[in-house]
Amino acid sequence: ALYEPFLKKDPRIVMGPDFRETFLKGGYYRATWDDKLTILALNTNMFSVNIKEHVITAAHAAAQLAWLEDSVEDAPGKILIIGHTPPSLSLYELYSHRALKQNWHEDWFYMFNSVCSKHKEKIIATFWGHEHEDTFSLNERGVLVYSLPSVSPVYSSQPAYTIAQISEKGELVDLHTYNTWLEFYSIAETPPRYFRYKSLREIMGVDNIGYTSLANRTKTILEDSDGFTIFKSLTNKAYQNNRALQLSPQIFYCYTNNLRAFRFLECAERFGYSRESFTIKSPKR
Image 1: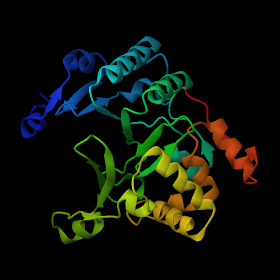
Image 2: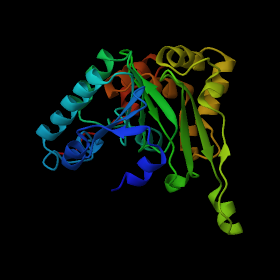
Image 3: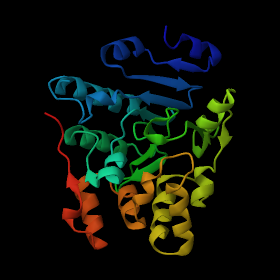
Image 4: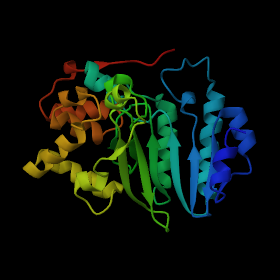
């Protein structure tokens, strides 16, 4: 019943045959769009370090990841994976507390990473929330993690949302973000209007926002003045809180290019940061 109004608006979207079973059992499901794009929605509470292990059993998490791999293999076209908590370092912890906290438990991260690496030609993107920031992370195995903004004004951000532009061939073309100014419209007592910010392609100055293109472009953050302009555009969005401004270009580079804490530390050390500069936060038990 929750999805019926949405499905009536766009009949091209069809829920998978196992929707009721997987959604009622674990809160995850798949849907297809014109047989060209398969959307796999994960319940990341099963993988999150914020959830104590006795609440979500290992069997539940493993079953969801097994379902994910089967669904990826069976999908006829391109694949989009979505979820709440991203399989990366917590950006909030990094820029608020200089802390390194991995959002997912290690076992589940490596299983997910393995699926994505194995099928990276089919998976066009992974989209996540939780961080209330629009940014991205990637690693050497070809996994690209897009974190999207939030319509919630928590953490002093302005409400924002992102529209993914996908081609008829099922390829990710661009990400367009829209934001509003909550205080202004609240004082004016009028319905808020949303305005388009620069797209990710415009910010990065690239022809596409695939893994290789973004990986090559992030290197320029450290190499030339044009790259520094990109860094400022990524971290100094007016509609997001200004804590990200505490990041140096080097730390931002290490964040975008490393999904795990030990890799981040190796990167930071190359730029002269000591390991003692960061606090390691362990998961709940």
